[in-house]
Amino acid sequence: MFSSLSRICLLASIYFLTITTSFSQSPQKPNIIIFLVDDMGLMDTSVPFLLDSKGKPQVHPLNNWYQTPNMKRLADLGIRFSTFYAQSVCSPSRASLITGQNAARHKTTQWINPDENNRGNLGPKDWNWKGIPKTDTTTLPLLLQKQGYETIYVGKAHFGPFGSFAENPLNLGYHVNIGGTAIGHPGSYLGMDNYAQKMKNGSIRQQVPHLENYHQTSTFLTDALTNEAKKEINKAAANKKPFFLQIAHYAVHTPFMFDPSFKAHYMKDTLRGVEAQKFASMVEGMDNSLGQILDELEKLSLAENTIIFFLGDNGSDAPLGPTHEVSSSAPLRGKKGTHYEGGMRIPFIASWAKPERTNTWQKKMPIKQGAIQTQLGTIMDIYPTILDLLDIKNPIGHSVDGTSLAVNLMGNSNSLKSETFLMHFPHDHRSKYFTSYRNGDWKIVYHYFPALNPANTRFELFNLLLDPYETNNLATKMPQKLKKLVNQMREQLEKEGALYPIDENGNITKPSFSNKY
Image 1 (tube, rainbow, N blue to C red):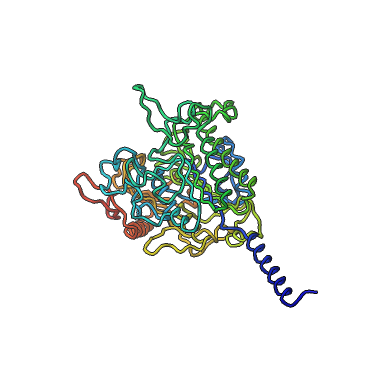
Image 2: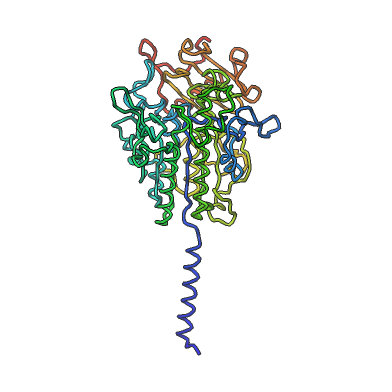
């Protein structure tokens, strides 16, 4: 017979065991992976993102050319967005991703030359070419560090030039940095080249750092970065810490080189040329990396507690035709660095690595499986989405231009979400000195110096619902609609504190409807 005291002790032990067991079985904070692909546009995949008139995925010739089964695997697990925007070049997008701010606000409005200020002759002198400053304590990895996350960066950074604070991802809130520095592309993807370009005088340039163990091996750069990412996932798992992994592949940026594991898949098609074959093999190599990450999560029993955001950083730069016409993003018009849809539309997929309805975090942010979201999204939305998932309050004084995608991930439309996207580019590049603004079905492009652009006009106006491929400029036919959109664009530019180009006389030029066409 138990004494009263014994019964109390036994009941207390059972209660404590029950509470402890319950606590140990509840999942820790979710792991978060941002899988970022350099220069990957909307059409660089076998997964169709564009929809037909009935809202069904429409397969185009480029979808049949590329082979990305793991993107399909991820899309089947979660939701893809048919209309998702980034900036038209890489550095602005990368800053937007970890700040939630539009480029006009954070003022890194051009890709960053690692060695010198590349504002262009007429660009704003005080644009933020040094990248995210030391005073910014609101970056996504810094916020996640405070939540106990192991923050890991693997791959291309390109946040700031050599010698800047932003050059090193460790300064921006990442505990680990493998491969990230000021360079925007590797000198080579080959381990035998030490992932660098060797010059005639014997010097090397554009070398990817921290990968010395792979030097003089046959390991392709995409595989080396994938190996390192998997190692870091295993370390975090062993330490029982939630992790935030940003794996940012240098692929599929130039120089185009055959990924030897997938070269044979594209050699039969000679119509597109050797450079296109190289590019396609790199796309499939990137996709294989995604598959390896998914498999590693399964192996470690981390999949159901890991959310993945897959995206590119700007439009496609595939070696397929002219820059401002229908080419690498066909049927969309334009390539990376242009003001057309092909320059800034990107693939975006969000998914739990293994859907499980009973998982605490998946209950908090459910993602509809095999779904397509048609409401417009932007790269600025990822920051507030992650903060929303973890109940992190946006830091006081930090402006965020994105909106949480929580409603959209469930397959619903968010009536409170803006249907606008502002792309401000006051620099010299492919499309030069322009601001593009989308509001609902309508899009305008303002050219600050019309003679410098192929369109050779001040305004371009498109109805993207009726003319998704931007073939019919309605600017002269619909002046009142144009004027309204110009005023809305100006309001947003001013709200975000945009910097403007400077004309040949040193005067700041702002958009104006009074300018002649």
